[in-house]
Length: 230
Ligand SMILES: [Zn+2]
Image 1 (cartoon, helix red, strand yellow):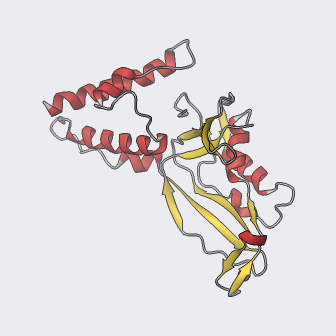
Image 2 (cartoon, rainbow, N blue to C red):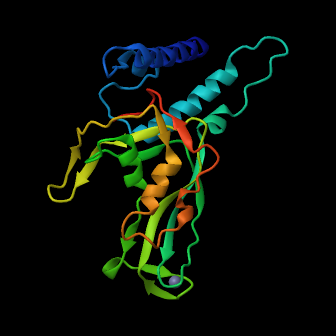
């Protein structure tokens, strides 16, 4: 029955983390867990979408578990533990206007190509890019196209930060998806505020605001074996 299968899924997920934490190998193949989730093993999933669906599913399953009398129902622990806030800011370099919509994230995707460490990868994902020439930004305050700077701004970090490695990139020259096999070192403690500050003060990015580093309240993320790879 469904309840039995769902309990097996929770045990399967616990086993995946047990292997990741205690395994002497640097990887773990969770084929049994994919079977418990009734996923076809040969289909590649989008890691960010998969993580979101898995967390939502785990929350639903845990809510359905029998509780002792008087034991309160679990809260929305997925958003409480894993959800942060960020914004993709586009700032006009003429008038300074920006109106970024803030949104929530359950994970941050960082590039791995040419990034020897997690700090470098995260910094790369926060660095500003410049919109100029054919790529100018239509500023609603100026009423015309202007040079602009675009960057991701971290507004609030979750208690548990999930980071996904973007190993696949589309090569515009060969028109093929390529996998970057660069290995990335992971520190015991990741100071997100220091990384965001470094990204905001990249040479040539004076236009990026100092508050790009304004991630609060938990600027340090303790990094475990849960860094999702793909
Ligand atoms: Zn403007």
